[in-house]
Image (cartoon, rainbow over all chains, first blue to last red; front, side):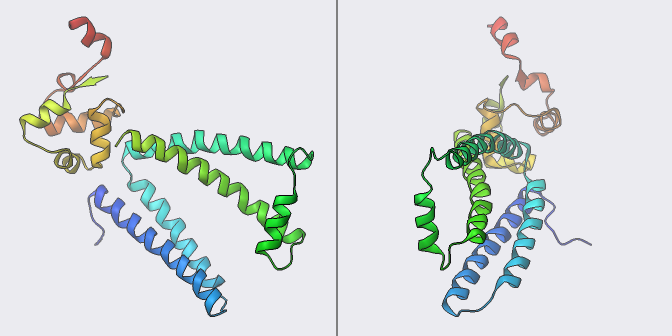
Length: 146
Length: 70
């Protein structure tokens, strides 16, 4: 016997609230690791895995209008972000865009800027831009239809 | 696509939230459909028709057909 709410609306809200709580927990873990100098990577990975499952469940519980907003936002927001990533990539590799601000940022935020941290920055920057493109497009699309 | 959702809702004294609950969608989705910013899928259109107890064509009209009738 399931104890989950039968209503799609209620399930959507439940999954959304659980996801917000999980993301807040990630924030708490990040702060705690800084303050108490403890390794929380394992716990954080479990929370991220839970978030992934919740996002899958929440998407399935969305109604068709909200799903349409996500499809359109991923397509157009993601496309704009991909163009931005490509332009930045080509610009940096051809010296059309200066690498100095990136280097300065790395030196500010990492103790030892090297190839590994540069690679990690690139790895994080690309999906971050995709997320920003998605979020901006989604907000514009959804707010106009509220 | 034009629709009579707002009128039908008002006749029954339902809020957007009431209709959203009956359709099991969000209130924002009801608003998007009602204001013509989103055309519902056939399954949702049938659900709306069922909730109001009317045939689909009495709720939704094609723009061209509606203009021709005016």
